[in-house]
Image 1 (cartoon, helix red, strand yellow):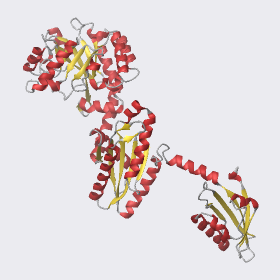
Image 2: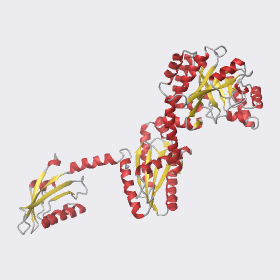
Image 3: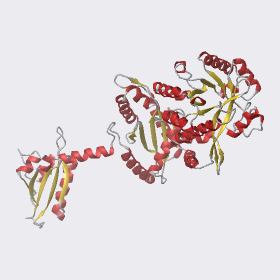
Image 4: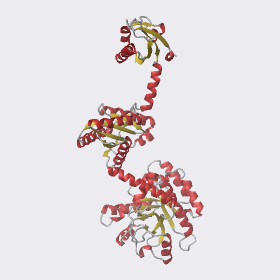
Length: 568
């Protein structure tokens, strides 16, 4: 093995006479004309290596310091070749009779392994860019430089918009090629002093250094660089047989001469990137402390929600009646409420997004389903209540869970309720993509007896192509159309069209947000079947609904509580 080949050499200090063994000369490729002195040896090495070796020999001759140097041979047209020189003065005297004896070893293979290990440790294998570890090291160095120079810099977090769509439709080979093309474009469009890194998936980071000593000027330069990158990424990418158009979301965190930590800057850039995502993508957002405050508040609310799921009494369900044209209650919608021990009543607009982001929407959705089925079982024993249905909202994440269908059927069976009295409300956005999986799950539950309602119809894609294929029995007109149907001719036309379309598909129509007699009169004239809103019934506890039904009156006939901002 070449890495273990070793030869010996000696050098007479006073005259710098050099004697190489045959093995040493062969290792360095000098077997045909072995040098006889140090001056003849050094030109065979790369410039920096030659200087290093000259100094090592001089120091050994002058002070007796042992030689230990890894040096590169000057072989421009060949594979890089490295040797290690070791030696020490012998017999220890540094007068004119002193000599240095040592060995030379070929370490080329060792150097290649070490460099490959270093490359794999600090660089991304797909794009060749620095990875997260190396970026953090460079950021740490840059922060130190800023403290000395007074210059400010910025850290960019770049996330490709809708990258998953490309992977799902064209395959991972196209996705990998896009990542390589993006890496090339980022490097091309930035300064040589900037650092571009890929930290995983479709996420890149850019370290902008030495922007300016003035904060305002530094921010302006960072914004200009980010805007330029947005334009660059928006240009089409040639992925061999496919022309891809894409965008990105960029979050920017500035840093200066303060004592920012690398992990904190990374978090700030990440938060800003998500702000850019919330702006619709293809956007740049700069970090602001308010973002961190919002994240901290969201985290605290999530922790409290997790506690509420395990505690008794904080979470409860209100039921809002759905009435027919004669204002008879035919069913109710289950609406989740949260009474926090310190915050008071928390609006669903606050805690539902937190539940979605933290994954708590899964146990929360199952909890509501359990409550609804338990209530159906209780009402089955009460005269006049046994035919009431309960509609339960289902989140996209809950519906997409592999065990969702089994969980629904198991819950219905466990409470021994009639499946047709349970109605699952889905939104249009949940039905887009993987329609075959959606249909399969809905068909299984429909055959089991569960019914489906399409919630907020008209606010999403409203595609007839999927509407005619789904096993629905009900459409719900979103309250945003109902609110202005008396003053906005377009809303009125949409409402009439939806009702006609639903009836042509043998679907019943529920109008949400009915708050005035005039609204209901219009809806009845248009042929609407069922109505839900504060005109007819406020959300109420289950026992209140039962009392109203037994009296033959709607909950709205009693004093209404403060209306929540939204319903879940």
